[in-house]
Amino acid sequence: MPLTSYVFDSVSVTLKHQGSDANEHVTVNTRECMEYLIELADAKEMLSDALVSVHKDLWWKMAFANEEVDLFDSVTWSDVDYEPLVDLIHQTITPHALHQQRCENHVQMAALTASTNVGEGCRSDQANALSYIMRDFNRKATLEVAKIRADEVSTKKKTIDRVEGRQRVRMFADHCDTFNSGVERSLSVVGDEKYTELLDFISRDTNKISRVDLEARKEKYSKGIQKPRKITKSEQNVCGPDISAEMDGGLKKCYIIRKYEKEIKAEIEC
Image 1 (cartoon, rainbow, N blue to C red):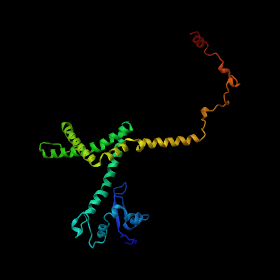
Image 2 (cartoon, rainbow, N blue to C red):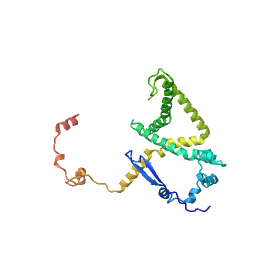
Image 3 (cartoon, helix red, strand yellow):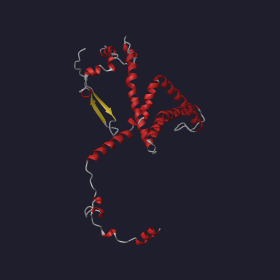
Image 4 (cartoon, rainbow, N blue to C red):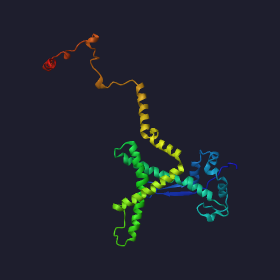
């Protein structure tokens, strides 16, 4: 198929809430925006990507269909089965947004645990536990207790901020059991080799920020060694260097004054 230039539709789209003011908005022209995004893109390289090349025929059928095709509405598919494209989106595209948000939450949690003055290794462990276990548990437990209380007519408080008491202990134990079951299933799928690689990746200091800081300091010190050391004003002697008597230098009067004669004599006698 020849790689001819494609002209995008020129449509102005207004994006609301794009500033500090709730009333601020930005108007974007689709043609100008797309031309800017693909200005330096290589069309051949894009077509060779697995996202396109694996189901290339289906993408082409969708692009040249007589009617508009909505991948999430099978009624618009006509006689073509676009299910592989739907699976491709769920497996390849959709996880990116969720993964990005989870990484952002993890970074914030790491900063929070760092404020407790714990070490780097303990900080990472705490952030993992809070991000992957406690945050998920608090959300599910709150929803479950709110549902239970909604069914109870006698309960006055409907809003649940945090589960407490015996109910929290029981629900957290059940949550940990479910979490452990999920971990065991994942381990069985991943295998021992990948699991060992993951542990090695986490445990070694190659990927830790402390290693980055250490290498930066080493580079800074190595550059500093090559430079002449600057003598500070407090280290400078206005009278010049002191040459000792053993090196045929003079002997200052202040060195022979008997200021502590009694103390010296007492030390000698002892």
